[in-house]
Length: 358
DNA sequence: GACGCGTGGCT
DNA sequence: TAGCCAAGCGT
Image (cartoon, rainbow, N blue to C red):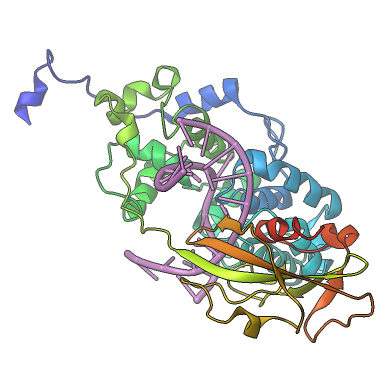
């Protein structure tokens, strides 16, 4: 593009990004997080593992109390491996993406049984463990073991897309990002570099209104040269989110106990506790009473519970019935007293339903 | 490669 | 407000 070479009109040609400059920025602005080791030291691989699983698609603020609670209750991988799955799901309740909790538990057992309670150090061995994908394998290898690895997460993708003005849209662009990331790695300090890039994305190179003037890579950034960093990363259009409807049956015993069951082990909210309900489907169910857990005199509450999942919105009507203290739970169901709710694995949508139990 | 899989905060 | 966004993985 000869026309763009005119120094009077062309943006300054970006210089290559310097990994050392980013590490120097990290040394000055490093955030203190509960799962982060003191400077110059390595973190316990179990803590890296636990935090990385929790942080998948989840914000630091949300994760923090869960991380602290898990670490207090299960201080090492063998302790977590010994725990019943139901306890892990109960502790995870509210954090979302419950397959993570099932896989976290399966992974702890695999590390205990197959690796003698020690996490393997290589990406390939980590990748073979349940719940550990390409990102998490690289993150543990780099952060816990100082292996040369590029944990390309959403932060890295945004930074890379801007640095190199990547014109391909996510998710197809992922293949490119991997290659670009490897070219950026410093000769050492792989753990710090991984976290530095995440911090850069989280604090300066943010999705909206990035603070380019403070960025150590400002002069290397193609999107900055275009004066349009927010354009990147390009993203494919997302599908619309449909609505599903259903009826939840709030069955209250005279002593306040609520009728509860456990969901199927896999799939949506797999293994979690719930109030019985009709199936959830677009348009709702023609004859909800046919799906009731027992015969009762129902009162329809006038305030539906609404909840938004990752791929659909839910609108639940509530049918309530009160039963005598002698009432027997139908097969596959159990009574749970309000004082026992915290020990149950109720996802957020069920917390909303149970708020109408009182 | 596309889709299924939660939740809460922010604009 | 409705949509966007946050340290992805399994199938």
